[in-house]
Image 1: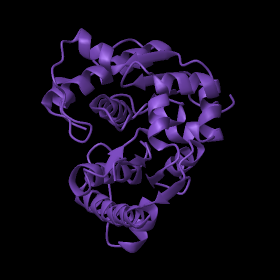
Image 2: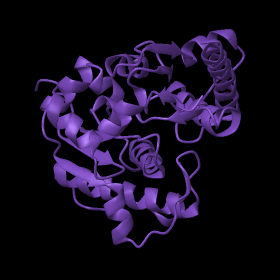
Image 3: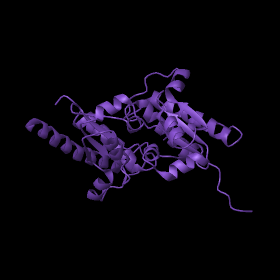
Image 4: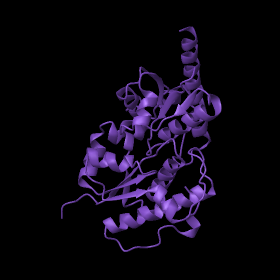
Length: 136
Length: 150
């Protein structure tokens, strides 16, 4: 696979879940699947930056959203991603009920654990896309 | 006297996820909101703004806003202008970094000490603009004891 999968976290600044989405994107693209994924900035994408749009158009992409408004997923869909996979933090929280994320600039330990869990789920999506490409 | 809503300034950070400067915008805006001018500011969520959040857009139409961008693409300023009204002030982190002779600031994921210092500088600039817009007397923006705190 030559093209890196674009990963777009929400840029939410008001709540810990947005911060966890951002951290999850870094865990995925820097620690778990650095050779297969890359972060694309949501603001650039939605403001129509040509380079950002080129990275997304026509391929599969992963949105990591903090809340149900799903701004990242909507942004990817509007820029022509062929399929938008979702690793939504608000869903990951439901599956990890003990975690109480706090903080925005500096996530607490539970926030970081939540980001790790979301990144782990996103890594499985990456592997599925990879396997699909191998069979194509 | 009618109970009029208090005038506040909306802060919109680009939050650019690809650049360390985007992380600086977040940290600076949060610092102003949480510590330096909590009674005078609110944050507006840029993605929500872009995705059609009417509350965010309406606020920016009727209240002054400060766009805080990481780079000269100025997504936050352009988005504000496109969807609501021209921001009352526009701050670009790379310009402030140049002015204060800032070195390497770390990564988008983790700012280093220089990056935290730059975030303080940007927070100070946001405070200056906030006070100007609310016609407040200037006071010390960033106390020495605040440096490095979120």
